[in-house]
Amino acid sequence: MELVREAGPVAIVVGIPIQMDGSEGEMAVEAREFGSRLGEASGVPVIGWDERLTSVRARRSLAETGRRGKRKRKGEEDMMAAAHLLRGYMDANPNAGGMGEHGSAAGGDL
Image 1 (cartoon, rainbow, N blue to C red):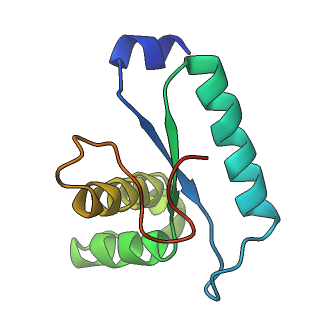
Image 2 (image 1 turned 60 degrees about the horizontal axis):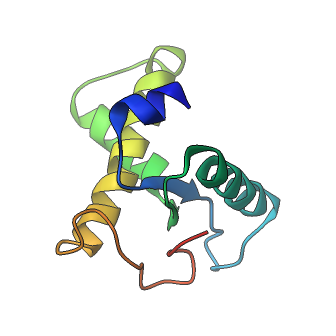
């Protein structure tokens, strides 16, 4: 929680692993529970955001830069996927100053 306090975010966006058919499996439930606990512990609003295809986009982005080797790339891939997740949220909420409701079933507050 120290990192959250130091950064002073207005919200925290947590990726929700929605399945391709739009349903939520066990991992999505766990992500929502994590987000709820994080929000309670930090006092910062937590917003669940659909993370479908962010890893695919991250792999493509890294491939375009010539990165090779799965083990070497995994940390970079995770960071790139997180960046795609946050960019998607920000693009969908341009006037909300980083806060707002998502238009899909996966978005919005946890």
